[in-house]
Length: 273
Image 1 (spheres, rainbow, N blue to C red):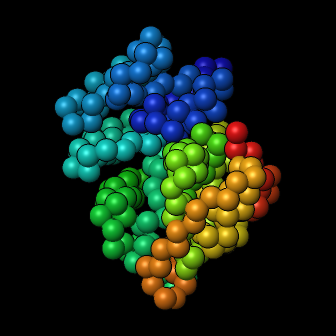
Image 2: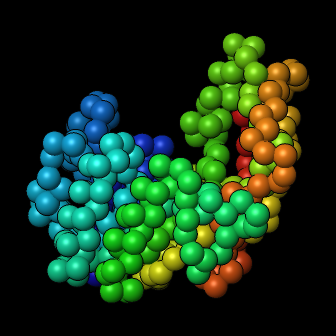
Image 3: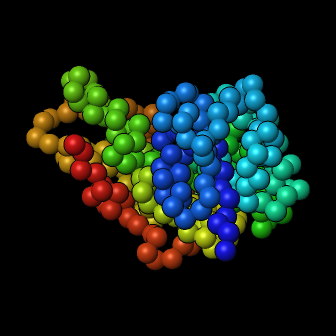
């Protein structure tokens, strides 16, 4: 049987590349890169794509993917045009699209966590961009799209953890938000979940984070305890006096038990070198 063709947009970024590494042994997997890193230039599976200048149709015609995963970052206007073209392509072809969205699509609702069927509303420009693209993709037939809402992502090679390490080394304070209640994920858990969704042809809206909640300050402190025996400087940032939530919890679209996890499992996964 022929392997499914998968195209990962933003395949050179932290998440895009983690998804590529998870899928490439199981599917005929392609990716796009923007910044010319030699490892991608020589890789026949990767296409250079500058969202602000290039038309995505050229890559779509070359690859003819059955599954597209969008992990694009960058210029907001260019992202919108690219996703309009992707939606047209998916609508006409035998193809599905999975869009990496964010908990920020709910950042205007700070009083409680958010579930898959809740109405989106955002106060941030980033959250509004994600909502705009979500709404565009929701016009596609339901069996052709997956919206994957993701909370804060950690992981040993994640930008967040890298920044923490650098701040510690430079003896600079790490910002924590004591009033922020969230759920979390890491690159390993997230890529396994995406692999499952593609394998099982699952579509719809999925909240891909831990099944429980934690205060940002407590979470960061526990992760830092794994770092070693120094006392990092902590700077508490209060944006409000009350607790506020930025959490996407799964309720109606639950994954199998082996793909669900707690925030403690994410902490335990951090052995920071």
